[in-house]
Length: 186
Image (cartoon, rainbow, N blue to C red; front, side, top):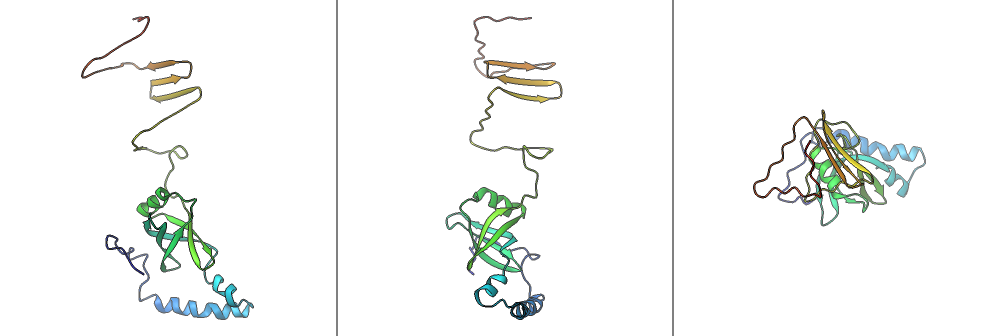
């Protein structure tokens, strides 16, 4: 299999070694005999050699070709990526070393998802969440509230913004405008 020059080989723990090659060859040689005993032959035997659904480790994702290099059953293979799988999910799995879910589809292997091994923001309790994007939009039908300790800010659909804290500081490098029909202090 061709490996891109900018990609490292799979980690030593993932890649098959010469030491375990005889064991794999023995297991591979025994499988057809075991299947023949059960009356499984031909194309059915070929499909039985690989599980219909399995877990693999992803080493490299190719966005343009919609493929990924994976290790499954001790073999490094190139698999297609199912159209329903978002590439950011696979890139995260690649970076974190998380397993991916693969499916046998005829003669080819297809990546159909990733198995989550890290907390998900909004689902699991976490110590820190970092969101990075060009623009972040948060929308709520009635109200958005943020709080930390006794300080809080609420944005309400009725056109009201409320802040509460022991001390509130507002600064501007240039003009600082406060506009309203009425301003009430205390």
